[in-house]
Length: 209
Image 1 (spheres, rainbow, N blue to C red):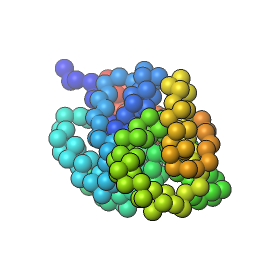
Image 2: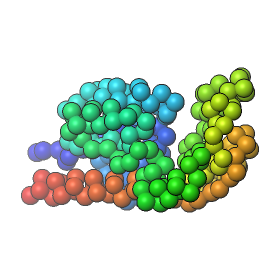
Image 3: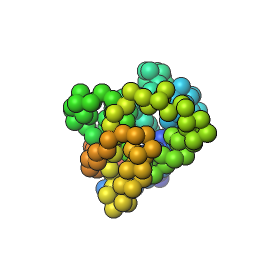
C-alpha cells in the first residue's frame, strides 16, 4: 500500500512559528517545517545556498516542497534555486510585504519611504538581531550611518495574544523613530499556503482513488 503524500515547508526561522500556526489553525496534516536560521536576515546573500542545501538534504523524502521565503534581499538569486528545483516560494520581496499584503505594503512604503518594519519575530528578537547582531550596542556611532535615513518604525503584529508591543516600542525608542502599530494577522502567508495546500489536497484525492 502506498503512503500518503508528505509535505515539506522550508521556512525562514523568522516565520516558522507563523507557518506552524497557519497549519494548526487549518488542521493540515503530514507537514514538516524545516527552519533555516533567522540570523540570515543580516546575511541575505547566504539565503539561496542555505535553501538549496536544505532541498538537497531532503531530496526524495517528500512529495511536495514549499519554500517559506520571499526574495528576502537575495536580488533574484533565490529564484534561480526555486526554478532549478521546481518548487514554489512566497510571493513578494520580503515578509513585511506578504504579511501586510502587496497593495497595503505599497501604500505604506509610499506614505513614508524612511520606514523600518518589525514583525512579531523581529520585535521580540530586535535586541539580538539588530542592536547586538549589527554591532550597534558596541559601536553606537554606527547608528546614524545605518538608520539615519529612517523616520518611522511600523510594527506589523501577527498574533496580538503574544503582547509584544513593549518590544516594538523599545525598538522605536532605541532607533529614535516615531512609532506605529498595525495588525496584519498572517496576511498573504495564510492565503498562499492555503493555495499550496489546495493543490496538494487535490493530489491526495487523486491518490486515494
